[in-house]
Image 1 (cartoon, rainbow, N blue to C red):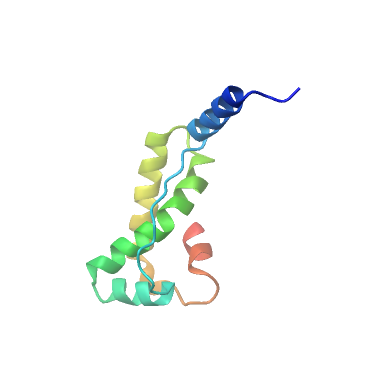
Image 2: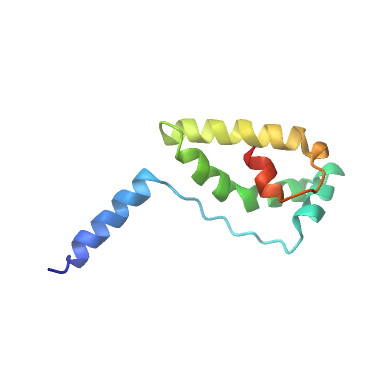
Length: 102
């Protein structure tokens, strides 16, 4: 028996509630290296673009371990604070995404 459209829709809604997602479109065409260099030179837009590019990825990862979305938001903020504070230590060996996940 095929599940009804209503049942499928309900299951999708439940999944989104369990694992909230954020969709923020990366509006820049700059590479990670260019964004990092911009951040290191104090360019505020680069900070925003870098955050917007990696926020959805990091938030999804954090939600797997956090108890609730409020905790996930706090962890995300703390994480990005550390990322920006240590940006000068990134040596461009491997992916930036892998570096920030550590």
